[in-house]
Image (cartoon, rainbow, N blue to C red):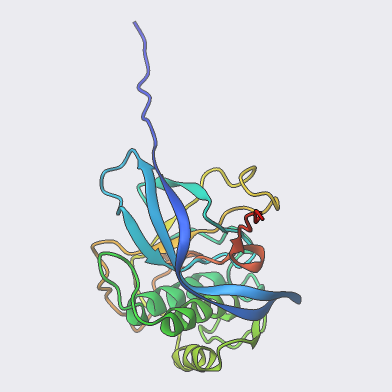
Length: 249
């Protein structure tokens, strides 16, 4: 008697909340996004079939043109997704040259996440300003890293917002080279369509695992094709969308 074994996929549902956000005017691929929220994204567990997932966590996103609505819940795949082989939900990572820049972009993003995120079991820490700087730096690394590993591309730009956070992010980016060997993980949303009112996919979120301490190499491994997530999560097509509730008189 022939049969087959079905392996059930696990998932976790998180509600998106404000973990320390500031508004910035940014642009990606020439498209301006005014009032984009950058900083700490607080996720609170609603339900999960995977007992290893944290009940709450503060992180950043990787997909600037994806959308996360504050107060809305999203389902994510578990176990979490390794950076390796990923390329971003919307838009793809790298400087757009398709010459290997995405792999180095993810390494730069992961380096930022682990080095400046002040990570604990509850996610990133620091002041709202520091978390905003981390998110800006992650976006810049994901979209402006070139094939050489330097963050000198111009796909993503910041034109207004907290000047101190912008300057701090810029300082973190100056010496990046894209040749780190971090093991990083993403919370990958599923489904990608039909869940947001604006039609955009949810954003991926960065999450650390038990192996947060990387071995830094002088030469990048060809197998380290990391992509997008870098522990980042873009704030959707214009970053976080805030639900506006109707006021009653």
